[in-house]
Image (cartoon, rainbow, N blue to C red; front, side, top):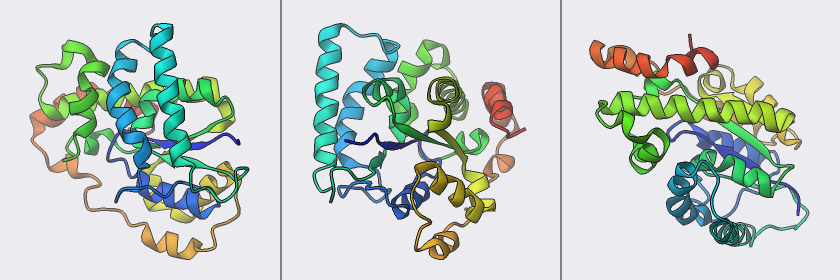
Length: 248
């Protein structure tokens, strides 16, 4: 079995179009997908294990680790059931995979990871707060319990993205690619080229269609029209990651 190409992000970062680019470059991305093209075989696994893994900082008792590993490998088997060639390039898109990167890397040392990032100021005012509600306590502890929701979302965005950037750069090296959603929207052809080169597949046959599909949504920059006090609270939490990831 070849090593996978995995796409992860804080929810709402624009991973769907990245998954389409990866698939168009010849990578099998599964057949059991939801409307966002997330790989469904991994969803129950994420629900069961992410918060537990994060709370334990990845260090769980051996018997628990074996149980988690067995369930993950069962998800992989189900996901790969329809792959046309067992030697073919494969992977999956599951935004919440970002929380499990060290675990998956341990099982697949040659994996490639695409880290999709979107401006944390916009993310803080998104209607998609699923990750905050499911995993916020595990990631942030009790310290953010009294924060307004946008500030808590910004704190999670900062923590998860900085942790992933540190791990990807230090441990994965050239097998780590960070894609900014705003850059993809601004220059889709060049960004698609970077993704295609990273996965090692051919130029997508439907390249022009992919380029035309990528449009900057009106939600880019939505933070600018929000309440000033909330924006300040968001900036206080997000600032280190905004600077590191090139947003200020």
